Length: 126
Image (cartoon, rainbow, N blue to C red; front, side, top):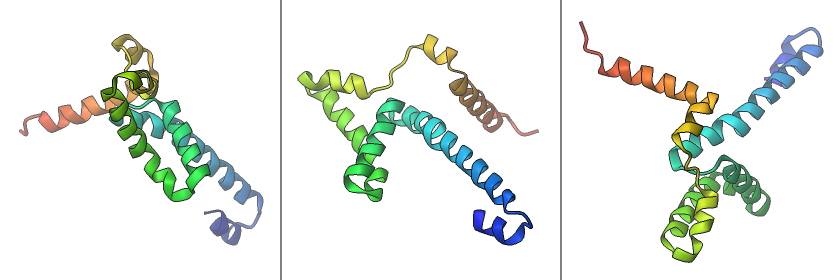
């Protein structure tokens, strides 16, 4: 999108704005939303996901970044089943209390959207 903006805009400042907006969206998406969404599904801690993806990328490259989350989920399951490794499973896990869930505004928004979606699906057609 930056190249297209450079070709189509009369001023190069427009490309800087596009780059800034693109970076902002990517930072929010990759560092806040994706760990919350993916971590919620596999019950992994968001910080563990971020560190795991960064370490996998540094050690084994770009392709390993895609495999980091499933590998962490498998490790967590193994750690839960082996008694002396259970503290590591707790460290990787994201089991929060109901009170903590209610205080998190991002998760509240996700729950509201999901609740509305379920209500629409279960509503009887007229």
